[in-house]
Amino acid sequence: MDFTKRTELLLQKEGVDSLAKKKVAVLGLGGVGGYVVEILARSGIGHLVLIDNDTVDVTNINRQIIALHSTVDQAKCELFKMRCKDINPEIRITAYQEFYLPGQDQEHMFSDCDYVIDAIDTITGKLGVIEYCKKHDIPVISAMGTGNKLNPELLQISDIYKTSVCPLARVMRRELKKRNIRDLDVVFSTEDPVKLNQRTPGSVPFVPSVAGILIGGFVVKKLAR
Image (cartoon, rainbow, N blue to C red):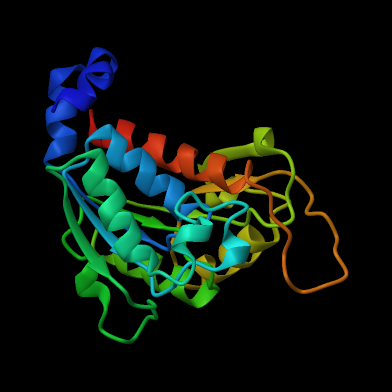
């Protein structure tokens, strides 16, 4: 693949060849998940599984890589399928335009993957994915909250039990402990969220994108070893 020549200089041919054989699932194609997909596709991952039931809304344009005025109301799964094929014509894409919920027998969507990325918004969905992956020894990494944040330099990858500040991580620690899940790689921020007098979280283009890039890079390096 000619487009991976520069990548090969750093990851070596063996690393790039390894990536081309890997199957990775991304659940949630929003501000974080969309940038994960971008990194994985441009790094030469051979097979991507994309899971999201959403369409592009005009309010997504400020932060989601697939969101443009020309793509409003179009399904994110289909848009990313076309985009990834344009990046790498040889890539395999399996797209599920579904909203993942545990207990709905949807785990077949990612059961045979080499890595699973959880970029879901709901706690119930996140817990379902993580619990399944841990039970079946599938490597998984989860995105914590990026809403109401302004400082991308405060994002980091860590174990869930070493996180602090992030309200979502606090809830996830408690729930994972109940389920006897003792470790989980996550991306989280040590920044105190900006307090807003409304339920809809604020967002900027330069925080969720960095979280997605961190996750994508982490997974690529793991799989290229």
